[in-house]
Image (cartoon, rainbow, N blue to C red; front, top):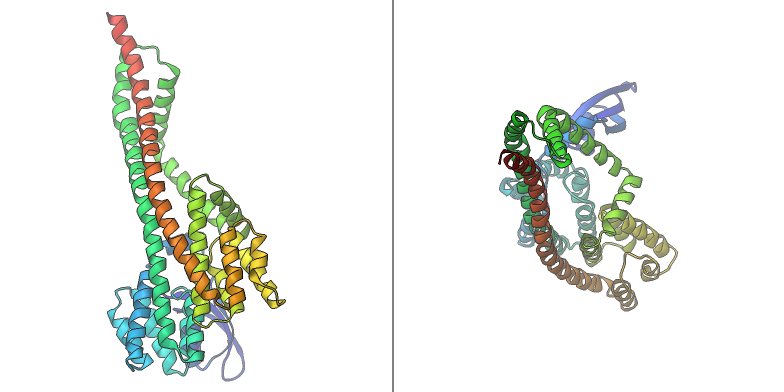
Length: 404
């Protein structure tokens, strides 16, 4: 997917020229400008409006499963002696994801111009995550590109499996909520107006609950477009608020303190943290660089801050475990196993064992969470629907009683 870039460059006469260009990445835009005999002084993405940013949500994404297949195919072909460019050309032809295929083709062009595989991948930050780039860099420098991409494939496969578990746990509650909303909407929009006309004909004295339900029905029926607009604007506003560091920290703090879901989210965060750091270290990435990568992609602001502070401790010659022990989000088992891994020089193995443990815990919690939410949602849906029906029937009963 291309995007617009603003640039300042010098032409052959040494004069500064300014303009915009569309390209898939900064590196691709720079290469296109060089082809025009322009020496780039500054290049940056063009600012997008709020609506453009929201529309980007509907662009095709490159998922963890796509990356897992890419790494697995690349590792298999390259271990058999197939040249890197040929490996990339084959994977670009076989992938069904158009965005990934375009990125791989762009990488082939950059490799043909003498760029390294790491630089080529770094030119597509919207496709290849930091862990992918860092592992490629370690693989190229150590000459172990096959084993590194194989390890990346395993990492992305487990990341995909974790996300699927979460989706499986949420799909039933979402369906129940959708059914509840649909049932309430049908009652308020189609059923209630008919009863309101009947009640108006008989001049029945309406109780407060009935008047409240009728007012809600008129509001939704008459001003539904305003409600939709309010929901859209509120959604965009909330998204923009949580896109800031302070807003994200506030949201993370709330979600981690939730009674049941907080433990589930915490288990996911710990699984991702240990899996990612263990994969990077096992792939030969230096500890400081690995911590930097994890801090950028771990997702939760509290963990991000702890990882940044851990990197500072490593620079000062201290151990990671001591700092993590002072952070509430890391349980004693995590810090103790990390301490043992640091002492024995097997930190990557300890981290992978921790990741496997939390993967199983997330799986068990997801099953328990689904079984707990199911009856609560059914009770909630029944309460709302029952309240609306009773609000309709109560004045009807009074009318029938008065007739008798």
